[in-house]
Image (tube, rainbow, N blue to C red; front, side, top):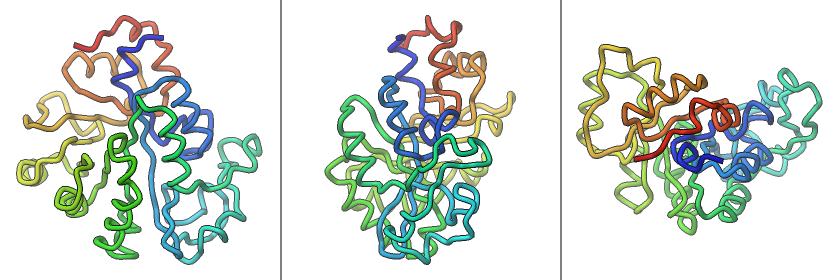
Length: 252
């Protein structure tokens, strides 16, 4: 395996092409493959448990009109998030994972790091400071392997003020206002959809590292890797790892 390219790639919601997104098995798949970085999403349940799930409901993943915020973790365990629209019953049953269980898995792969995205819906539902305090408490033993990311820059400022854990800001709008905000609070990572970085735009210079997402084409990944983008987030993690055009890429 080319260990250089593994240092550049981030598996979006685990191996979400071959497994349900944010599932324990999907995350385990990329860690076993030696990928240096995995990204997954975190929500808070009614009993203040952190679970690994993108949406605030189960409509898409479990075909259930169930709000995460109205149910405890134990109640949510009754449902399978096997994404039947994409996989039929191939991955039934797939339980929702506790963040603590995924962190224990991550710890078995000490060379890997996780981008832990705290979802804005949970911040709004339970209160930003309450959620972030609880998240920092849970992540503290795993701090060296975790980067907290969010669209909410104020939540990331909270992390900076109360923890040594690295932070990454997901930039929704690639404009002057966002650049000014980034220059003000100086996240460790700036994260953006690569399609928002059009050809005539240059990446904002700063002390942060850039991670661009939605890059599923090996040639596009190679181009950005050569331009100095530190990390490339993809839904096609195994295809990019196996791509001939990426095999000879060397990290400087």
